[in-house]
Image (cartoon, rainbow, N blue to C red; front, top):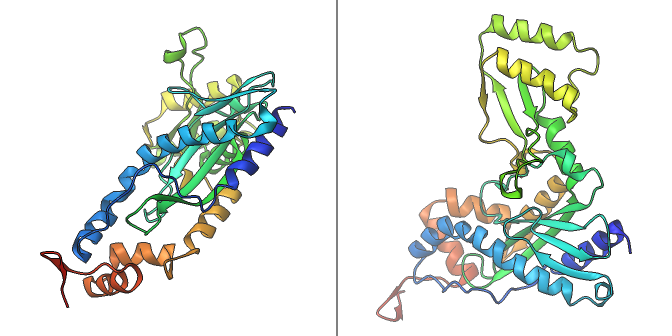
Length: 305
């Protein structure tokens, strides 16, 4: 198998995990609707932990697939990018960057900032997995759905979406290949124009001088030098929300998100559960939790009427 074949077969194996319940950690059933509401607001904080645990389980799962045994071994990188790589006879080295999403949250908050220059051979895929406790807000983590997409396509969609000089600049990292691995820079950054209207007009005039392709993003040094001249000459601010997966507008990620949000889970769509738990009235929330999940007020071990 070559790199793309390894990634394709591994993607199919990963997608077969949809619906799988991981016996990694268990959240106890809340003792009251009030406790359930509070739990719903904090359970998303488990995503980083669950993401790491699922990474370990994913490596074991892939290594149990017979087609890889004569070619190499899946290994987890910590730290390092991507999270999981296939070390063996296949070159370039295939890998997966794993992102966990708790879909009761407002958006896919995971970020993807790695430069297009790291994906010239399309050797790394993004594995985005949506998970919820199997009882919505308690129980064991269940995989709701999984999508795997080319890292190169995600980086390209991100840069095309954000980059709009001179108003918004996507800047590649400096060349740090001479540094030790832990000091090498791999992430792009986004910068938003903060100048006055007359400054913006001057900046636009400069960009117009770059020619008809001057506003199309290019990760090459010559184009990046032009962007850095803008950055040095005019006021910009670093955009701290840059590269959130939910804002990249990648077609496969958008389809995955909509599929998850519209999926029925314990009698309601996941999107409706999110609106209910975070914006619904106390009465509506309590009624839904009682009817769908059997969560009622309890006192001294007895269920209140």
